[in-house]
Length: 308
Image (cartoon, rainbow, N blue to C red; front, side, top):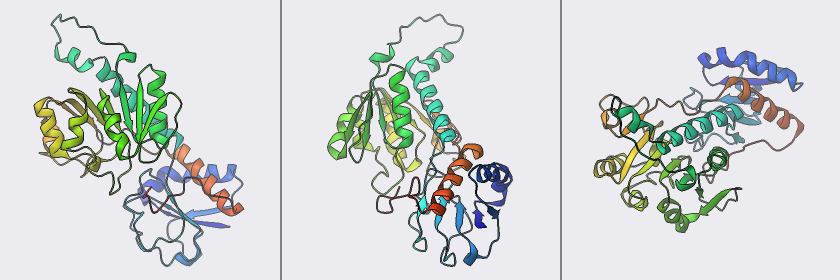
């Protein structure tokens, strides 16, 4: 019997219990999944940021902590967490992110907001073709690569940037500090899909926003702290940035009275770009437990030094 502690909240267990059990059965795993195992008896911990479990010391035999979210910034620095930590790369979440990014990129590309704002007025205009609208994706992890590939398939010239070199078919890849300015300088649409680390916080600031073409549009479904909010609001007011669609924020829910709610050039979506899907995420969790039992390498294990 494999003892799995569900430390992601009782409210989530209602949605995950059946998909997890089905995935365990399909993987041939005999699992006791519940909340409240004796810590010293736990083999694996299913986790979500915000969990009441913050001290991992008593879980002396646990082989891994399996995070249900893609982001691990709220747990990766926990000094009591000494066992492997795996982030979630969920096929359902990836599909949802691609759909959100492509949908809003096309919305900006086709200037749909302009059409909505000029209802009852006949004002013809000629949008460029996708091949004339460069897009840049900052962050070329699993989600960034999937979105960049999908945008390229739609005909956009796509550039990507990451801290370390990447090679993505159909995407012009940049890396390191020297590549950031090049990646931003051609981005009529900019997509932020970087993790939240000390190195990426406020990556979009007064200086880097000035590297974007005048009138660029920004999509942020990645992490709120990637953007210096005051710098973005100023850039929107001056016209350096034409529009921004933001799905993630430093404080969530976005506080009432925050300028983003009422700014005419900002669209707020309530952290809906990509949510972990119980059915597909359960299969990833089961596969990692199977690997752990077989002594194989875990999928999506976090590099603590990098923070993701």
